[in-house]
Length: 324
Ligand code: ADP
Ligand code: MG
Image (cartoon, rainbow, N blue to C red; front, side):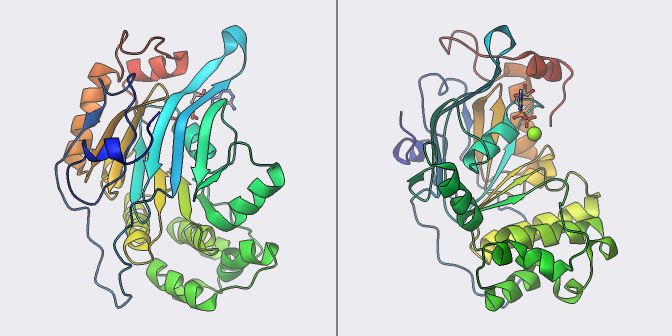
């Protein structure tokens, strides 16, 4: 199955999103694409020099990825054969109805769980058959993860929380990198505070810095603004955007919020464990359009796949018109 760039370039004609989910006979018929070029919300000017233009090799890649939870009649087909690649220094948002497989996909890409079939590669290394110990080491150094609940250690200061992963790995904290990150995250005057003395937005920014301290190849965030009010969400998204534009971070987030997804360079839409659309240079309007289209078309139509896989949770969510 083609999960490379060749097939993608024919679909994404221009702009900053050279990567895309690859074509497969099952999905091409129903996948939406766009060549609209609308700039993402721009970051404020800064003295930090912008990284060089993204190169063309994927940081993270999934091929023929499936995940089945449970067995027999109780089996849930969470992912039905995903082919996707993520370019360096790109910000991707994943959207889709509740139960469509967003968290499952992210956990598999981050090596937090293993697929039923298919492969995941990170910086050219195959995670799929990696021994647990090696995978743990790779997660420590190459992968950052931001959760909806900030998961900070209450007894440590913000700075101690940020540097914790490096301390645990007996590494040396890169003070220059810490300083740059903290400046971008607006945390410079909060480093001595404990989580209880910080707002939710500030705590999540500390969690972002913690995810990025080891300079991972890629950072994943599962609904990072889920617990924040709209002002704190905007702040966090602006910081995430800047981490890509100014620090060169590669970032993948799950969100149910079209205005949050509009900060990304690209939006993937999951329906029933398949990629139903892959939108370059999204705006809130094109995201809403795509969601509308998907909720009416329901992604891959029966007959386009040999065995279209649906699950009850998704069907129910879809019927209720819920998007999460
Ligand atoms: P999303 O993040 O899009 O809401 P998930 O990836 O969490 O979706 O879940 C996809 C499907 O897999 C859902 O039907 C969910 O109920 C099911 N699922 C997720 N995790 C598990 C699990 N550990 N055991 C059984 N089913 C699961
Ligand atoms: Mg989820």
